[in-house]
Length: 495
Image (cartoon, rainbow, N blue to C red; front, side):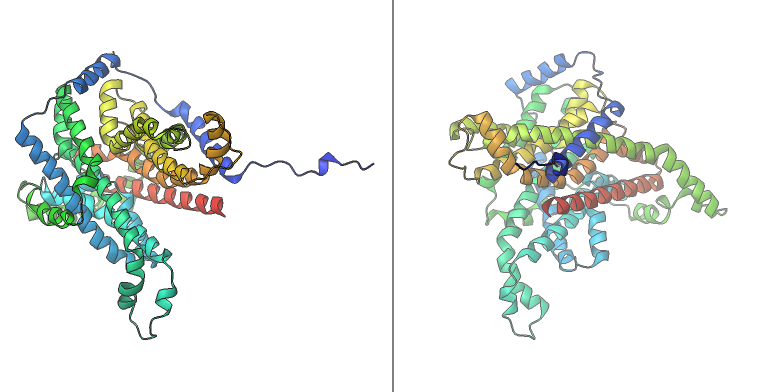
């Protein structure tokens, strides 16, 4: 008889993907004691009931204003995304250069609203402010994604070309035709994101839907708020109906005529912004010294940057964990392995509405209902990102062919069949959205939540643009660092 020494057996180790999720969950739990999740509103249910009653009887404001806001929202989205596509494609051709990769990472790591606040200081309420606020960060996003798409196409057609074929000729006749469907598909997705970004630009004063949403909500006109939100949802949900190959050039050509005229640009303000306003205050006087610059930087770092970064980190980590739980509970709603086509319809409708609502807009509404704390931000980030990841994971689950011995009960099928097989894709989506959640968390400070965006907005209100720019760069570096960690974790998970 042979006896086995149980001490020689290797200890059981959980799969790497599960360990990664557990680490994120433990970090989020450790952050909760430092997260302000208090409901400070006197009676949030009254305001919530008033908002829901507004959805029962929506009422549009003056039709001409609504049409102008709708056209302006589309105009900024199409013009900004169109310009970003051109610039992003050019940048993608040189994306293998480390300097270019760093430059594109910096562009996309700064939120559109931060860019809008920057351009607002010297362009004012001019269409260029909204156009560049969308085009600049989106160009960095397009550069990265276009470069990855072009690198993933088969290399065999290019290898059959004559040896003296130039780079552009090889690109136009081999890689670009193969990558074209993927480039078009991703551009269409980013256009939907551009519509959301364009609507949010109304919160800084540009004449998009967000401007009238904020105005109606602040005055308590909930039927108007409901009507504008419904109109926005219909606009996003019907994109496939009004966006066609022949309508896209029409929207691009017509967009500059519907962005509004705005205030005239005072070019002296532009020059002063770059020559004086963003120059650190200790370097402007005649008694400038390195010691005064160091003291200035240390003061900002200790009093503003570190508290802002700390709050941004803890809020984003809690929101990331809640997003994951939210997505895992939602994706079965649109899975063909869990519900019939009729049963999946309510889930599709809910996910479309949830993922179409920008985090900033949702956080603004929840702040009015629940009061100033981090709780509205956590809920807003979790709803939008959880719905998006749940939708993508649900679509992935629909491509799965069940085993012949798969459980018949829905709960068992979810736990023992769908969840293990969709988990790698789910974790990849989560790691990709981590940097996005961090970026959105930073900008939510503009609403009064004390992330780093709060200190940026305060510096701008106090006309201290040098401080604001420094804080924005710190936020950008933080986002780049998180993106690098997420990519490394994803590579280790795939490997």
